[in-house]
Image (tube, rainbow, N blue to C red; front, side):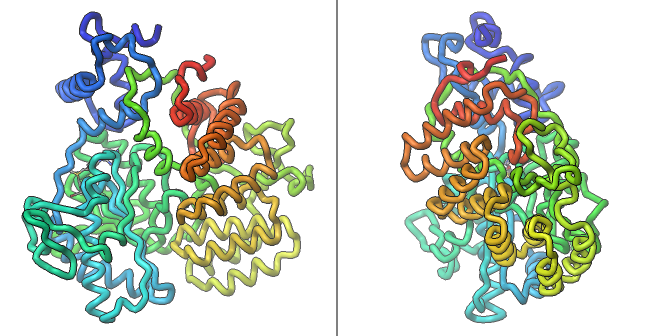
Length: 537
Ligand SMILES: C[S@@+](CC[C@H](N)C(=O)[O-])C[C@H]1O[C@@H](n2cnc3c(N)ncnc32)[C@H](O)[C@@H]1O
């Protein structure tokens, strides 16, 4: 019935008033006033591609992910080129990158994120710039580990970006294509050489969604985030929320480069503004504690993997309008530990909203508060060995594990990735039954592409708590990526069963802000069943 309601009589078009709030929420775009014409045109285009003579109302209502993908692809503009805005690149070359190299000299790691990267010219320009600088100073790059992430919500752009092959139009403000260290000419195109192409990782990420920063998407502890020419159609409050999340994704002292469309939302809180010629760049102040994100959960939604899987599915029909909306996240979510660890009962309050019957208890202060007070300033000053020692000296095993886990999160937030990995291993060695740590371990492996190790950790997590839907869901994704379709189908069925009667608006534990309604939708999409078959309200 929902489908029939969605279709404008005789037109084969979904009714705008039904679609509008949904599309606005999903894309963050503003279609008020005369902008609604754009949306109408885009819907028409998408529908003309998927509609059959049967009419939309009779197509099976399967899911809305791919529909939205097509729609947003229609609504977004991928205008970009190499070394766009010379002032920006000059400021990066002369000030920002040298500063990052100085700051990170000890660990020799650098993490950059081009958010809204379109067809890849921006992150590849950053990769080339970095290569030029590192080669100049060391002649051999001196073993720097560079990680450059390019994300976008248009899968076609991402596909083009991964290919790394461009025509002259992409070089309209630079002649970098002539540099044989970076490009190989193939008739009228220029192909990036593997040493630059392989430095950039591309992934789907909808910036409007509250799914970052997170370890799984590799969006934590960034040294530099570049966010330019993306916010043109976004609502101001959406852009402001994105910038707030970027603040959390940056390490203290990390840099944010905004485009002209974004600079009017210039953040003042938590950033200092630095002006270099005609470029204004924001720097996250480092005088705050290198606090772990209050939102970070060990197992965040596998946005990247999920969407690449969803993109493979067949084009859907008219999407059902979701009957649920995620509620805002609580400001702080306590760590959850498995019951036996938290059995010092009376001392530990139950997590708000958690199921008392399941005896899950929260460690309200995420570990030893006094120890943490001493660790925080050490983190700020990067006296990490001293901080390690304080944790080692905590005598209570449970407190030590929880403090360690909190420390891992703080290390991720300030881009101490290798140390975070080591600390997590220690934490798990001491407390292998700490569910959140096990999920975090799994997500590290998943991010590194080690699917076997990820599967093993998700199984361990399930050994600790069989009823953790996120662990089943992640396990399904990992199994699917390894070609184990039967296993994936089983895990998805279990996920759906576990969340069957949950309030679709309630937040999923370890779901990084995802509510049960959305998890149900995603599990349905991947398992290929019809969404309405799984919605019980
Ligand atoms: C004009 S291009 C900018 C490319 C590049 N940043 C530059 O400045 O050259 C804008 C890109 O933002 C992407 N975009 C728009 N909304 C987005 C969202 N909510 N999440 C992620 N990417 C988005 C579009 O798909 C498009 O590729």
